[in-house]
Amino acid sequence: MKNHFHTFSRLFVLLSAIFIFHSGTVSAKEVSGPAPDFTLPDDQGNAVSLKDFHGEVIMINFWASWCIPCRHEMPFLEKLYQRYKDLGFTIIGVNVEEDPQMAHTMLKKIPVSFPIVFDQQNNVSKLYQVSGMPTTILIDKSGNKRFEHKGYLPGIEETYKKQVKALIRE
Image 1 (cartoon, one colour):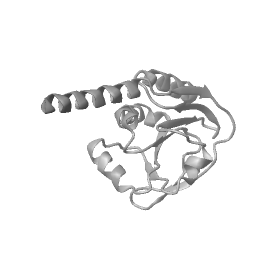
Image 2 (cartoon, rainbow, N blue to C red; image 1 turned 90 degrees about the horizontal axis):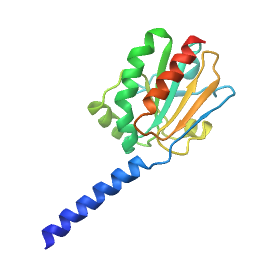
Image 3 (cartoon, rainbow, N blue to C red; image 1 turned 180 degrees about the vertical axis):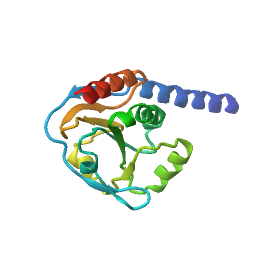
Image 4 (cartoon, rainbow, N blue to C red; image 1 turned 180 degrees about the horizontal axis):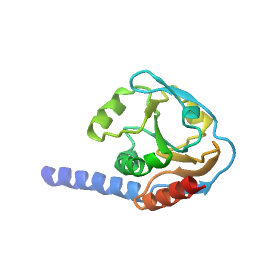
């Protein structure tokens, strides 16, 4: 009986996690206005600034290692980056955890080649009014915010591609 209870408990937790993941709040909207500049350290301690990428289409992706949807989204973001980086597109991954060690551990399992920076005090997250993970902001070549996505569900990748291609063509 005890064994069945543990099996049932594990199944309940798994199904609850799947339900939460698939019914999570997701929103997408067009936004406008200049993207606030910021400078954050990368994993080598080098300063990375948004202004370093002026003239490119930029995707800022706020994420955390504990965020299951972030983990699912990361491989797609790497593919998107590889596909469009030579056309003037970049992604800046902004990790929001106080201790970057968890991010480093995750990135060993899910490696990416786009810049990852660390917002340990959440100053940039507050600047961009991030309220959930992941949050993704698309910025045009002139440095203006154009699209904002809160949350992640499978299928959003096609929207990302269309928006990135449209901004590259401008």
